[in-house]
Length: 199
Image 1 (cartoon, one colour):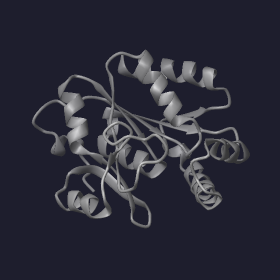
Image 2 (image 1 turned 30 degrees about the vertical axis):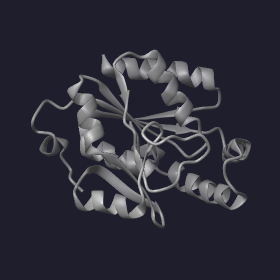
Image 3 (image 1 turned 90 degrees about the horizontal axis):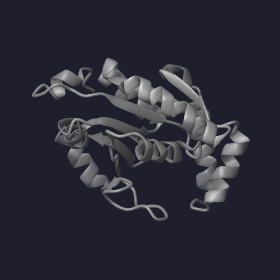
Image 4 (image 1 turned 90 degrees about the vertical axis):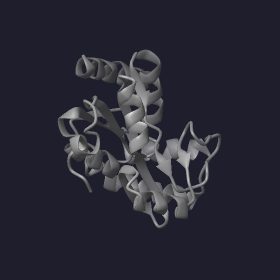
């Protein structure tokens, strides 16, 4: 894993980025979409994933979807800023091309990644990044949100809750922890934090 973003993108001045991480169902995607609608000059970095789209997800909009073999080829070609195997043969990563595209356009790049991805990105981007962890009110509330989505089986929900428990243990490694017990309040709070960071 490369540690210095400057060495990866040394052909121009690197821009800023904002990293959002949270357990699945904590409201991260809703908050990220709110910020993209309400703050100018933010650009969303679409993550890569080696899985099939879920629900209404679309390739190139929600994720860049690849087969496991395609994903591994991109790893071999060093096309990712960071990547990880979240579950067996279930890879997620950040494409260098996504970051470069937005920085060249003068945008602040916004990432929506899991906790380990968020920590990895913060370690790579260092002072070029603000990392934010979104906490749900409780694991019980998280379970209800996941069930209400109706996109996953009970076994998949249990796997996500087990992962959520592990992800919550990493919250203190982030620059800012946001409790999402009231969505409107959480959006207002984090909008102020982001505007202050990007100046």
